[in-house]
Structures are given as structure tokens and as C-alpha cells.
Length: 251
Image 1 (cartoon, helix red, strand yellow):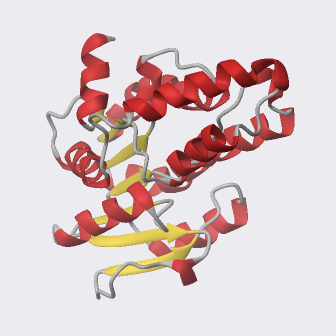
Image 2: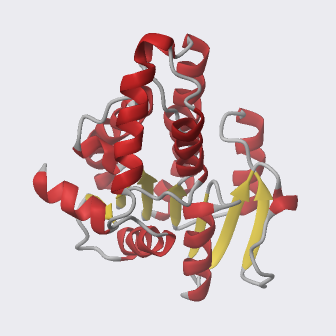
């Protein structure tokens, strides 16, 4: 029976993806910082393990406990919404630490096992914001763009070992914690440097208005990740959600 390890499963896309794999009969290792908050259903094919992708010791312990996996889904991530001028460098580093370095560390941890079995799939969850130069998401987009560039080269490095690397690009999902943060900043007008406040407020209000149209659901992302993990003919980069698919077509 196939086994998948998914990061960032406490809520949102990660939780929905874990449920989808579970419903498809897979063995699932669902990871999160605090397993006590998990709302995933009990199953003899599910293990919920603690994981902090920014902590090398946590990664080593969890990967060892998980055992051999056929698929790694790097879903854990953090969002950031602000002008670059108003973003402290420590925040920039923190965003990259989770979104890029944490994902790299997870791949380094599972790759020896995948090489040994001469097979495996790595699915990295990125962002459809890369299809457009969206303002105020500069730092977040940079972390995701770096991951996409890394994947392009890794796909060639790993092909001789029978390992595939794919990217899923979700669209807007207002129901996620990132969406909640964006709405809060629009409503409260907080967090932006004063010279950017009017522009930021108008920009984010427009994005929230766009959320009244087609958006991405957790099931959209779960379906795309599952396809990326199981369909040999899947594109290397796969948009997820009606809005993401439209943006990809326009790019």
C-alpha cells in the first residue's frame, strides 16, 4: 500500500489533502506543529506526527518515525502581506525559512529512501500568485518563486533515480488563515507603512472583491496534489482551482 507524508496538516489545504489520500486508500502520515489540534478522523491508515519544518531535529525524528514514503507533499507554509519597505528582514528570513528552506530540508530527509527504492514523487505546494506580479505579496511570492526554480532543476537531478518532482499552484482561498489575515488587514487598515496605507487598502479591497468570484477550494488542491502524486502524465506545474487555471491560461 502506498504511503504519503504531508506537512502542514492542522488546517486548510494540508488537512483536506490528507483526508483525500486517506479516502483513496493510502497510508497517510499527516504532520503538524501540534498534533493535539488535529481534527483528522481516526484511522488505522493514519498517523499524526509532530513536525516543525524549521527544526532539523524535528525533521529527522519525524522522517525516521514515518518510515519509507512513496510521496512527500510539502504543504507547510506561511503567508506575508505587506510592502517590502514595511517588512523587517527577520520576517523575510522567517518566510523563507518555512516556505523554502523547510521544504528543502524535508526533501533532503526523504530523498535517500526514495533513491534506495528507485521511485518516489515530491509535490511542492506553491502559489498561483506567481502567474501575476501581485503587489504587497513580494516577499511571499519570492519564497515561492525560489521553490519553483529549484524544482525545475531538481526534476533533472532526480529523474535518473526514478523520482519525480511536481508543483501545485493553488489560487485564492479566502477561507484559509492567509485569507483571514488579508481580510483583517483590509478591514483594520493595519500593518502597512503609512505612505503605503491608501494604496495597500485599495489593492487589498480589490483582491477581496475578486474573492467573490471563482476561488480555490481545499478539495481543488487535494485533487491536484493527488493527481500530481499518481498520474505519470501530469504536467510538472499544475494550477489548482478555477481562478488559478484562468490565471495560468493568461500568463
